[in-house]
Image (cartoon, rainbow, N blue to C red; front, top):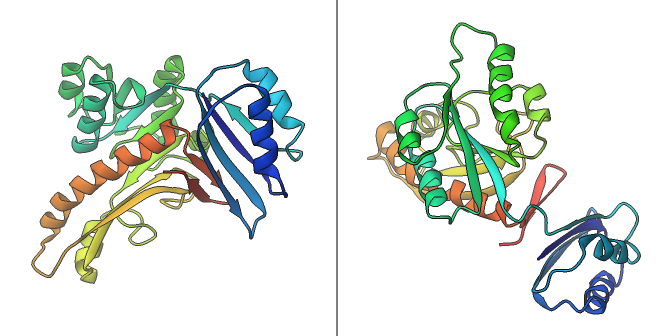
Length: 275
């Protein structure tokens, strides 16, 4: 069972929380905590062996925590996700393979693409694929069609696995801090489209990938995971794209694992990540 706590910091929180857990006869397997001394905020993730009544445990924890504390007990132990794609297959393929072998930490409910290119790979894994074209329609109509398809599945998260469309604030607001994107640069460098070409033109010696929550500001949502690899003058744009695909897949997989295991806290457009 997982216990996740976020609240204002105060002296003695770790001792008080541990005492409540001990009173419930719960054996602590893992405990991670962090204090942001600037913002005076406290973050904790506890993993315990036994399972008890979460309502009673939450009531006991509230008696020792500051007002307005956020407590989640065993939050969504197995998540459900919907995946949005365009044409690139590498991130989706990795997700589908992990889903097939039950190592994803979540279940893929459906895949939605604004092109039909990836239908075949989804059908080979027995995953429902929907094609929603963005051509010849307004963004509002396009997003309404996607929302209509997603709604019956009630996913916990949306994963943008190389979905090359910018979502509107209204759409993002339906899933606050529940839309995860993989961007093909080491943010905040080279936001927006064509980051590999921008990197090539700038002559950078490192390229990277960033998994982040989607917010109303393009590619500026809270960062979950990042990775970089070296490049040099001999790399063409195509070389950078090919090299980048490997880290895009790796970074997205890492970010999803962290999120699905409830290891990520979001505040002030930043994250605390207990790896």
